[in-house]
Length: 343
Ligand SMILES: C[S@@+](CC[C@H](N)C(=O)[O-])C[C@H]1O[C@@H](n2cnc3c(N)ncnc32)[C@H](O)[C@@H]1O
Ligand code: SF4
Image (cartoon, rainbow, N blue to C red; front, side, top):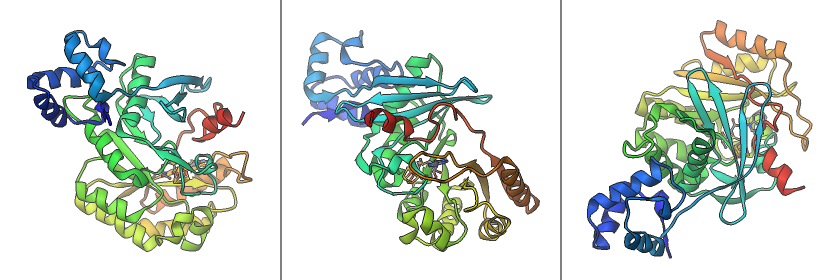
């Protein structure tokens, strides 16, 4: 079986080159073509001999994505890309322009098996996990297509990163490698629905990335109604895992809280949330839920969202209402892919 060259570290590639009787600087050249110059095939590597290119083609797969569709928001310029993978599966990625730089939201799996009731990504279950190279490809393709540098990456598209732990970790190491795109760890956020062993394992890696926890409810009972994963891990365990992440990394936790009208946006919910997290070094991101047509959840009103935010703020909690990016372009992740595969 061929190896996936884009998922290999520079030292792994050096070892391989030595095994092929090549000089080690060749590994550096190839790595630069792949991860800095972002070429799409061995044939584009102009300083590599024909003979070595052939050897590489025999030994390695070179992943690439096919752009299927782009939607551009007329409101804020956000672009949503639908890409086709080598096996015909599709993934979505989103490009957002902020004052501090360009951010890309990538998918980590094709579909998801976590079953959160408000999420379009899980409606068809999990197809498969993405390789590290397929996660990098989303960023590399968007960089080529927009002609602009990406400075921030959020693993918040379709999929549960902790359900694909090893590939996600390798992806982060490659993305932050100084011989590659060299994106700062501090500019990377990984969002999880709350798989406690994965969160603790990530804490042990002592990376400087931000861990975002999709909380969405303040009691176990309410959370179980929204997110099946809450049957496996209690809020107490989750909060302890968050404290552990901070203890190991010094990075404050982000709590994602999608406001669903009449479900989790009351005054009482705000009070319970304060009690739950006030002892933690954290930030809360309130996200008015993006309704999907398969479910009858509605977004909280703007007034409710502001009242919720004010209550948290008065109690000393850092909080923002997330700017809704690209609502006019099938904003909730997983919607565009479903629209295309079910048409
Ligand atoms: C799609 S998930 C992917 C990362 C990870 N699986 C998780 O749940 O955190 C990213 C974020 O989008 C949120 N989300 C999913 N569906 C949404 C919707 N319809 N409206 C608003 N947020 C949504 C999730 O709760 C989560 O906070
Ligand atoms: S919110 Fe995250 S974990 Fe839940 S179904 Fe969607 S992608 Fe999966």
